[in-house]
Length: 138
Image (cartoon, rainbow, N blue to C red; front, side):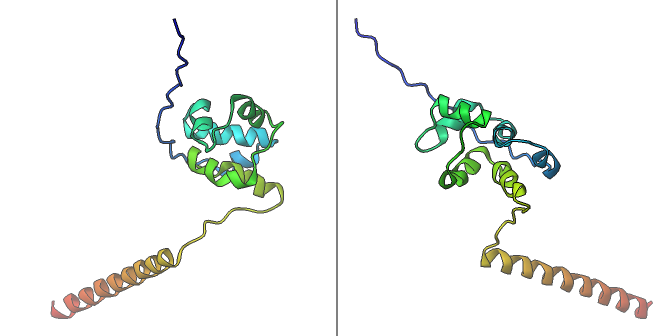
């Protein structure tokens, strides 16, 4: 009888969208602790995270990343952040060199934000004008 190896099916769950306070990130003393915090904050199991990477991380590598004896390649950090749904790991790295991360806005996002500010200003002016007109007619 042939024994067939069955591949373990990984769940396709999405990570939790939890905001991790900067103080908690900065309190981590090692890269392994920061990597572990990023994984824990996702709410995903280690196997889910490792399997979602392309190519997948083997269990030994993942364990060494969590212990801090291995480092995640820089070209895989963005993918890791996407998988865990947070930027804890690169935020910790930036803090180690006295920096912080800033989200880059696209031109479209910048324009949309500007339009929302102008709209809020116009609504406030409109409200003031209505109040003035009501005060004069009373």
